[in-house]
Length: 396
Image (tube, rainbow, N blue to C red):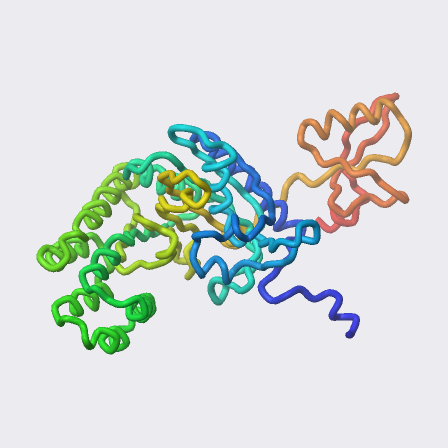
């Protein structure tokens, strides 16, 4: 192994260096304060858990994303979390076990065995909010609005909200009476929006029902799509109509506060199908081809922890958000302090740091390159003066 190998990181795993780390941490604090102002309480789940509690009932997708290892204390299998949302569901159902509505938020590192998409990180810093104990569309609207407020507080503009409802697909598939294997084939083809593969998979299905399933591929766009869906489902799949109505109601509620928001409907949106149970949503901006934030309703997860509760929530990746922000404007630099033992100097430094200033001890007589000012003794007291001798200041 060469010396270079010791410095390499796995593909898709990044280190966050000082400049970006400061931006990530500042954004984390800003957004958690935002969630607190909406009534969401912070929780910090562990980085790893037993796989039977971390993955139970959550589908194959999350299982494949999760790194697993053996606990040397118990001999049981541990999983390193790939998604914090199930952990928060466990906290609501078991650790807190509160009655009524519960609002929780979180921020923490996750790890994926493989990237979710071509450009995605395998080590995202996941941040999100979850609302438990309310099955109304009002709860879904609150979460969507909080997701939009998240992007707004970051300063991102030109956001497109993508809305879907897994109940549409469930109702359409139920009307077809497909076998389990055939459902998997249709699901895969519909995710890829491949009409030829759908026609092949549905060759032996009653033509009218097959036509409705294939029509899902094109049911995406502006609000006119909802009218098309109502006409399509009115006679063949009436059980899908309440889901269409729910999408209409949510969109209207969102537009009351955000009339200029671009809302896009996709009735074949199957992201998280094995996890979500109702409304699903995502936020996009033109600068990124991937969803910056996404979420949905997932009422069934708490049942595996002994307490089924209605739930809806969203999450985002802090590193992905920071990557879209402009470079931060240089601050006021830092203050250099001499490495001397003086109680008056110590007091002055404490006051400056309490006021938010960066004060750096000058070791070996060489000020830190970030310093543009220095503490100078004058008549027995210490004052902050410009650091004329610093090379960085001279270069300016």
